[in-house]
Length: 315
Image (tube, rainbow, N blue to C red):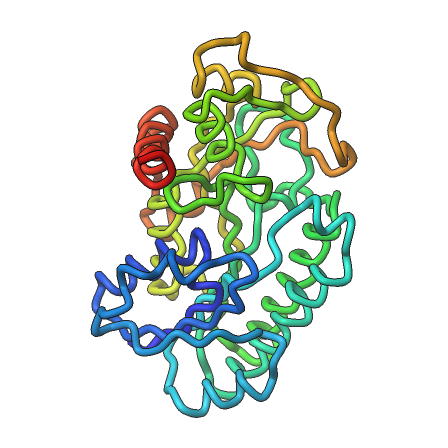
């Protein structure tokens, strides 16, 4: 198939690209490199399936129009977005324009050219989990940050195209994804930051009390979920979760990564209002509709991430 992948040079986008190329598709990447980098996709540069890499903005309507006219796309995997919760609180305009307005422009082209859309949303749209059965797709949403608000708005826009125009779309909500190629600095994920600090001999800093829990999904499991959602008609018009189905407190995660509790320090939370106390995924719908379930345990995933960070940053 001919596929457009927005955000394809980002952390998750890079793994989605790898899987799509392995499956034999022709890929056009559109990425403005605000979150991604060309280094993430350097190894695929000469791959016959990577048709072109376009450095550009999803808010550039003329560029989108040209790309969709020039290529007969079968699927649009729309991963391009502003993704930082804290940044969205400090600068809501940028997040809204990228995540909601940008998504509208993408949807318009997909409508005109009848292209299926896989829209990458987030578990951050949910209210806290209240029990150990986990968060299903019917769980209440609570936009505790402008990032979550922008994603919920975009989700509704995407689903409206299914109902109004019969366009095949699916909204996917992966839980906290981690693994190789994730940023290890301030904008990175908690696992990548903890591992980098451990290897660099630094302390691990935890916002607040550290009792908040996360459901951590290894990136290759996430990419497999993203790709399969595009292949299946069974999920059209649906919202679908993906996660490990196990949550861990940030305190316990830090202990799992570093071992030495003396190296774990608690610091004041920058934006405590955006914190979700308990995140635990119930992925039974993905299992039923896509036959998807995670295959990499948290311990195994941390080990793989640590190996990558050690060779990438410290050799």
